Amino acid sequence: MSAASSRGGPLAGVKVVEIAGIGPGPLAAMFLADLGATVIRVDRKEPSGLGAPRPVQFDLGLRNRKSIRVDLKDADAVEMVLELIDQADALIEGFRPGVMERLGLGPDTCLTRNPRLVYGRVTGWGQDGPLSQVAGHDLNYISITGALHAMGRAGQAPTPPLNVLGDYAGGSLYLAFGLLAGIIEARSSGKGQVVDAAMVDGVASIMTVTMGLHAAGMLGKERGTNLLDTGAHFYEVYECADGKYVSVAPIEGKFYRLLLEKLELQDHPLLQKQMDRAQWPKAKEVLAARFREHTRDEWARRFGETDVCLAPVLDFDEASSHPHIKARGTFIDLDGVTHPAPGPRFSRTPAAPPEPPAASSTDNAIDALRGWLPDDHIEALRANDTFI
Image (tube, rainbow, N blue to C red):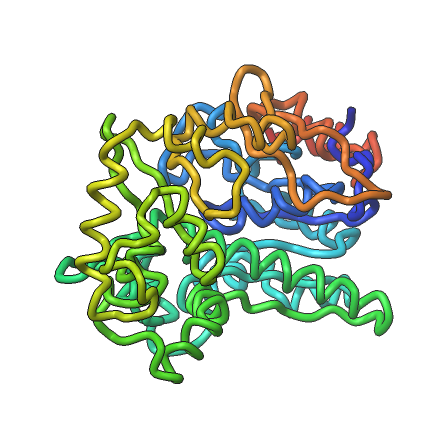
């Protein structure tokens, strides 16, 4: 199947040029491609040395698209990329501000050629501001928004939540969201625009409800002492007899009472006043002692499909075998590698099963360009070594 052909899905017919980067840009491109958009990835001829290099089959965010490799300091290569942009609904780039302009691929140039283009720019700090030209990573972006400070246990340093909050929630998802909003608007106005997807902005937006709780005095500055940050005994992870863990989260009173009944602790004096913060540390000790009496899987079987809001804490290898996860097909196998399945799901326009990440090759590059450029032009560019 040509990379330029429609795979079905709600975004079938949408065409995207992805200027290869690391982190949030590629995952945003994957989200769009998973749902049927045709995405062509424009990569460097030589490795960038950025990110965490790995064999292509394990670089899961590269699935559902093929790439071309070019030297963007070559005028012929830049012109070829502009020809792709001429036909695109959207562009994705994740360089520092000003880099695309210096390459001759800035938004003014691209929007002059393709006035309906939605030009997506994802960075940590944004396109302007004092830090816009400074290097950074996810951990830095969630630091200055207040998010990291709130995460962790009482009396301990903040706990980094992998790089899912800044890079992928505040970056990839907000970029994809912004691109789709821009594409919808361009289809009525005929005019494109620039989408400035800054991870600091995205993380701050995600924290909207949490900041509301803080403003209301319901979320204090001391982490690990509040309702949702492991302060409460009923919103916590507990170690079991086998050293594995269960998560417990019955916030609502009726679910909390059911948990106590199932644990046979409904009459324990320290557990009667669920929202009495003064009792939370001692109440946590009571629950911790009880959960250490059985293994994680024994607790999971005991509670089964009840409303106690308890789940086993599974590692990556275990997760795909959980009965609910298996029933929904939340994970899929592509060439022997476990991938998360595309989401969300659509009742009328489901996308085709994903294609695994493709290794760079001249044949794959030619396949990627079909549907974007005429065959004779592709062959002339190949003969001129404009791409590989």
